Image (cartoon, rainbow, N blue to C red; front, side):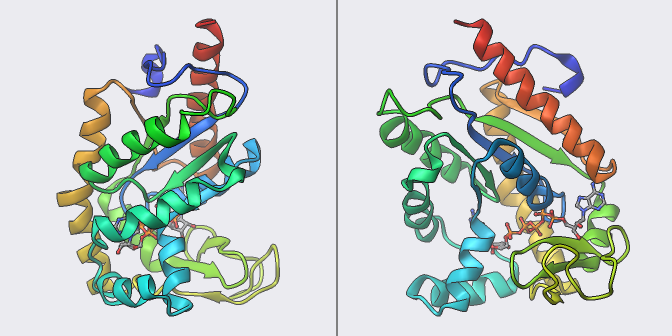
Length: 252
Ligand code: AP5
């Protein structure tokens, strides 16, 4: 479904309560701007951003058993096996800060993960009728031109302290290599090397694109033009979210 087409009525997976924002799922290829936009959504609606990439990198850094298993897979640009992801995501979604809703960035990434998430929400998240985020997930795909993606990934820098995202070509920091917001050092991600970027884009084409089809078949997918400047993409996403909220309110 395209944003311009209107008709954003949510399907009936849960009761459509308007008290919380509920789950928001951001889809899109590596470099599409999921992390950039997820941070803004999280801040605007006061919900946590849950990035499976960030959670995995944290595990790698702490040398946890999961991190040890994921490290080489991530360095090759491949997807970490589904079974390793489920526990990590379930543990995070069970935390109380997710109750009003959350924004998922980088999950689900295979149709199996999408099916797992639907089952998890139905069995664990929506089981509590008082949970404010008990709403059908809003699924938004950010579409970006392939050549633009390469530019975004090779130019990306991330701050060490809080993961704020910059781009040396497109969104440079005011002081080189320094985060505008917290002054910490900006670094290049290990998997933002040319040969790994190509593997990640291939993994997306083969394994993750069908996730959008999964949601499209259910009439739950809205795409936005991610080639636009960051603020304009943010506005498109805000309109999608507000459209869903209005549709939920109307259904009462
Ligand atoms: P993950 O960390 O999820 O990486 P990814 O999906 O490859 O996405 P990125 O973080 O690279 O891009 P993004 O869309 O967030 O873009 P960003 O906002 O940074 O995953 C890493 C790895 O972990 C995977 O390869 C896999 O191994 C593993 N993994 C993670 N989740 C998994 C799962 N569920 N299952 C299995 N394995 C999993 O923006 C990119 C750049 O563009 C930035 O420099 C930004 O400043 C710039 N930019 C953003 N928007 C704009 C704009 N509108 N205009 C101009 N510049 C922009």
